[in-house]
Each structure stands twice: as structure tokens, then as C-alpha cells.
Length: 212
Image 1: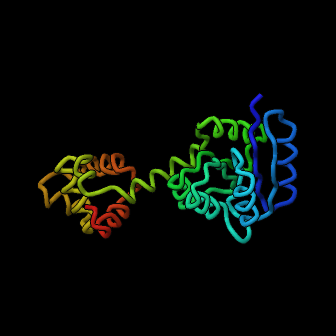
Image 2: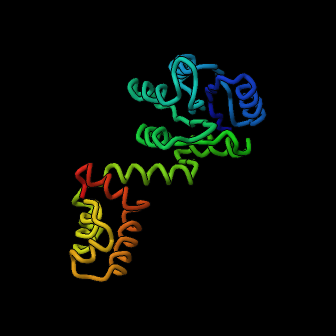
Image 3: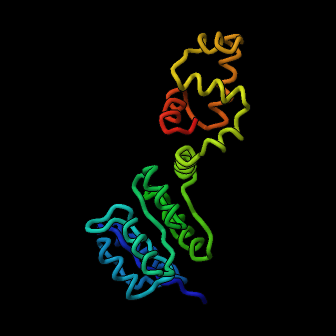
């Protein structure tokens, strides 16, 4: 039977003990080390080279993402599952960029944590879908280029987006292009939908970044 070697890291003793007991009850897991901070976790991964490291996102001395970053620098092949009490967009984006394959909320049922680790070990992914989708949307909005926007929007939508981003109201935009104010509203609705943004302030921000 295939046995999956694990390093577990969490700075809360009760959580760490719970994780250890849960995995030790499963026949296909072997816990090779438990750690209470990020530095200990990195040392354990260096020493034991486990199949999977289950790391708390927020730990003393070295947080989970810093551990992952160092593992990448050292070319370690251990796969990582991050545990988080809450998910911040920027942390999620960083985790995805670093190649973290599993992200689990601590509020999830224990059996789902076990399933996540098995999935990640099998070269799959297990990500908290709602939060990851929001984070990826944010990443796309950050990285989207002018050329990409021009491919997404029609020429008229691009004109209206730039006019609104410059501070023109709907009525002023309608007068500028010789169209009805209601038509401007329809165009804006489509623009927001296509760019996955939530209003005219987002257009202003994109203009400030030089995207439109």
C-alpha cells in the first residue's frame, strides 16, 4: 500500500494535535514530523523530504508562504497544502503563483482536509473555489493590458470607458458621442460585465494605471 509521508505545521497546539491524530488514523499516511512554527517546518521538510507538507498560513518566525518560497528556492519537490482561518486575496494570489496545490479553510470538515491531501499528492489541485475565484479575478484585473482590453471591448465601449474614466457623467458622455443616456448605461453595464469590475471607480483606477 502506498504511504504518504507528511510534515504538519500549526502554531496552535490543539489544531496541530488534531491534525496529527486525524492523519494517524488513516492507513495511507505517515506523519514524520509536527512543527509549531515556520522555521521548524522548513527544517523538517529539508530533513525528511515528505510527500506533502500541511502548513498553517499564519505561523510565528516564518509564515506558510515564506516556507513555500524557500522550498522553491531550494528546489524541494514536496507538495504543499496551506491551512487558513481566513483567506486574503493577496495571500491567495501569492500562493497560486508559488504553485501551492491545496488551500483549505480550517472551518472545513476534517474528512475534506484528508481528501485534499490525497488529491494534492496525486498531482491534483484542491482550492477553496469561491475565494480563489475572487483572487484570480483580482489578479486578472491587475495584469490585464490595454491590448487585451481592446480585444474584449468594442471600439465604442472603449470610447465610453475612457470618457467615464476621465470623469464624465452619463449625460455628458451621451452628449459627447451623440447617443441617448440610456444607451450609455447599457454600454457601461456591458463594460463592467466584460471586464469583471464593479463600477466607474474601477475604470478610473484602470485609467490611473494607464490601462485604458
